[in-house]
Amino acid sequence: MVRAFPAGIAGLLALCLVFALNALSFAESAEGGDALLKKARELSAEGRAAEALETAHQAVKVEPDNAAAQETLGSLLLDAGRAEEALAAFEAALRQSPGLRTARTGKGLALLKKGDTAAAEAALKEALVTNPNPSTAHYGLGLLYERRGEYDKAIEQYKEGLKKSRGRKK
Amino acid sequence: MIRRLPLFFIAVSVLFFSLSAHAQALLQAGAEAPAFTLKDLDGKAASLADFAKGNKAVVLVFWSTWSPRSDTALKRFEEFHLKYRGRGVQVVGVNADNQTITPEDRQKIRRTALDLKLTFPLLIDEGLKTFHAYNVIALPSTVVVTEGKIAYELPGLPLTRTEDLFDYLLALAGEPARTKLEARYQPRYDAVAATNLARGLVAQKRPEQAEPLFRKAIEKDPRYMLPYVELAKLSEAEGKTAEAEELLAKALAIDPESLVVAAELGYLQAKTGKLKEAIALLEETVKKNSYPPGHYYLAYAFGRNGQLKAALAAFDEALALNPYEPTAYTLRAEVYQKNGQLKEAAADYRKALELLLGVRW
Image (tube, rainbow over the protein chains, first blue to last red):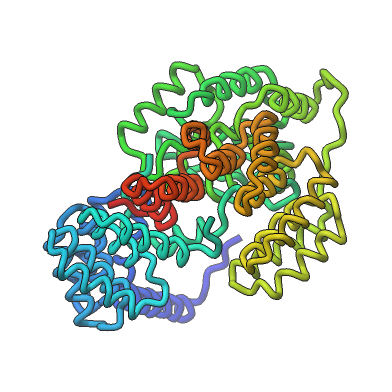
């Protein structure tokens, strides 16, 4: 059985509801960049690359100073083969947060993709110095040496990457 | 088989692969069945809990369109499903065609389902998370879940053991046994708990705290093989290979049928140069079952023994069963490198690292 509230209490409840909805809406808009970033990552995890990229672009648009969003955008652009734009996104991420180690690795990989092997080598070696878990930087250097036909050096890098990416290497 | 993944998957993928699948496969009885929610071909999501509701058992059949024996497995399970549906045993197909499923993959999966007239639910394991969570080492593979725990697992489709599996399923469906069913070994719960805790500590890089727990698990249930294998790995990682070998030999004496223990012991023997012993043990292991680590450890032993052709053939067999196992590529790379084939070695090391990181250039 529904009991009718006195008008004053109902009005107060309605007012509270409006306040609560406003507060929720404010919180959503404040987290817009992060929420979009999360969504981009989820879309990518589902294999929806184009939508993920579009969402990452939106995240960067909403929060251009969000280094994590720039980095994710860089990764997605790199994955889409757009090395030049990826490089710009990684550099933007590094400008915001110079200590963002994965962005440094990403920068190295983007340079490698562009064919600028000397700059890629420098960036990836720098990533190795600053990154405590640099498997991807080793991977990038391995790729670089493999492309140059320096297989012994490539093997060395891949093996280091394998050693650091799991506790026990066969 | 593996397609390129965005770089930010790196951390996640490393977690998935931090413990290689073969360390646990075949030794999971009694362990919690990892929860999952996957989508079917029409995008409808379903979870393990959904299938478990009102059923005694959920039979997960991991398969792919490219694995030669998956069709046979699917046909067999379809027959079972048609005959015994409604008896509390729910068959679910889990497709593991690729890390990223393309529209072409979907078409192939749909075609297989139509050709084989499959009527049980088919889910797509996008990202292979469920494949890895269940430590699947071969395709096809079957895992039976009862009361939220893994009750039975069977990699591949070996002749005799497949019949054993169906005997078990028939019993679950309330049918009289075709042959006398032997009571299935289930490890003691406290041994499983101690092992799980210890494995968690290993993952957190706290091996010194894990070691006594593995020993405790062995003490509680000397027939439970997983703590032996894990403890041997810790010893090996610390360079105590002789200790690791001794531990595995002790375990094998307790359970001579344990393929996992035999394969790990064979690998250690090969690594320490006991090649004749290793090859004999591993050949016997692969004869018993198409257990992929047995194949790639045997391949490694052949390679170290200078039998390159036999080694490459055995690696091929292992990779046909499971192309997602980095260890197989790492060991083949080692064999190539030893043989002076640096280009091939580099390519295989790269492949192993790509699988670990979840990326492809």
